[in-house]
Length: 72
Image 1 (cartoon, rainbow, N blue to C red):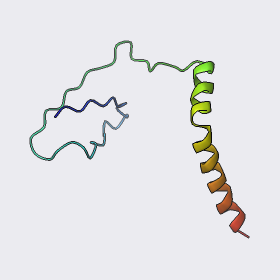
Image 2 (image 1 turned 90 degrees about the horizontal axis):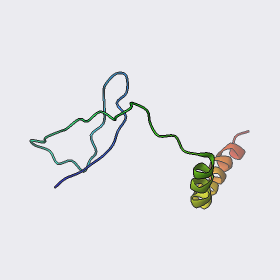
Image 3 (image 1 turned 180 degrees about the horizontal axis):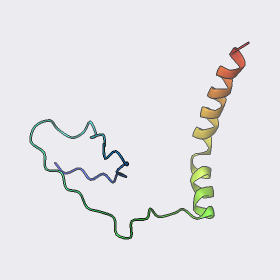
């Protein structure tokens, strides 16, 4: 089984291993990203991402608001 996951290594250099990785001997390979910068989304790409997930984002927002309305 081969699992590929791209992660950003935090300053403390601690990462979480996905649950899909089996226990036992495992080979981890670390490959630095060339250029060292994460690609930035354009404004149009960001708008499209929001459009694709608008229904889900609106449901989550309404859920959060429903909790705020319950507090006195």
